[in-house]
Image (cartoon, rainbow, N blue to C red; front, side, top):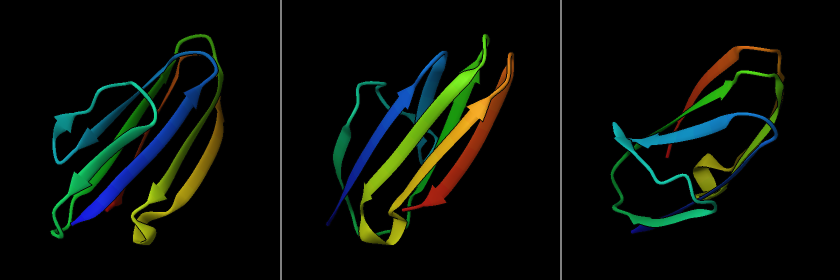
Length: 83
C-alpha cells in the first residue's frame, strides 16, 4: 500500500482532482491509501477572473512535486501525473 497526499490552493477559481477517472472531494489536503498498482492523478483548474494556484503532492515519493502557476482571466489548466 502507498499513501497519496495532495494539497492545493487556488487564489481565484477552483481546482478539481480526478483519480483514475473518479472525482475526489475538494477538501485539502486529500489523504488516502492506494494499492501498489499505478494510478493516474489529474487536475483541472478553472480561473474565471485570473489568479494563481499551487498544487503539491507530498506522497508517494515517486510523484512528489509542487506546481505554482498564474492563470489569466478565463484560463483553464489541465495536468496529470502517475502515482
